[in-house]
Length: 292
Image (cartoon, one colour):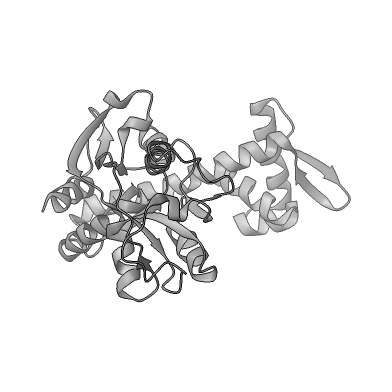
C-alpha cells in the first residue's frame, strides 16, 4: 500500500521530498522504495532531472494501475465494514441513458432500506459497460447484452421495453406541427448516439426504410446532459431520446416532443450480471428493488 501511495504521490508532486512527506516516510526511504519498485518491474518509471521526477510512458501506465488498485482497496474496506456491521456496504452499477429513471427509482427504494449504502453510478453505452462487468468493476449493469460478442456470458434480469421519441427545444420551427414525416427532418442536424449502438442503429433503419440518406453531419454523444444542453443551446437541433428520460425534460419545459411516429421497435434492455458470479448483498437487493 505504501509503495502504491508513493507512486501516486510522485505523480502528483513530481518531487521525492514532497512525495515522502505525503506518504510519511523519509526522503531516503522514498528513494529506496522507488528503486525497489523499479528493480522489481525491471524498468525505469521516472525521468530524473534538476526539476524533479517525471513519469515516462511505462511510469504513467504503472501509476494508472496504482490508482485503480488503491481505489479498489478503499472500496474493499468499505464493503468489508458494511458486512461486519451488518448494513451498508458498497454498490457499483452501470446504466445506459434510457435506464436511468428506472435505476434511480430502484435505488431510492433500496436506500430507504440501506441508508448507509455507498453507491457508484456510471452512465455509458452498453459496449463500454459490459467490459466493466467482466472485470468485476460493476456489480451489475442496466444495458443490452446484444452488443457483446459473447451475450450468453451474462444473466438477464428485469427486462424493460424502451420507448423512443423525437425531441427538440420548445422553440424549434416544427414544434407546433400536428404530424411530421421523417422527410420533414431530413436536413435537420441530429444529436445521435455513437455508431453501432442500438438507438443509433434504429434511427439509421428509420432513414433507410424511408428511402432517405442518414444525416451527414450529426453530433454524436452518449451523454444525457450533453444532449440536453445541445438542444437547449440550439433550437434547430433534434434528437432521438428514450421517453422515460425525455419526460422529465418535457415536464420542466426544457424539451418538447415532435409528432414523428417511429416504425421500428427498440430492443429491450435489462439488468445484467456476469453469469455464475456470486452477487453481493447490495447487488441482490438492487435486483429485488428493480423487480419491485
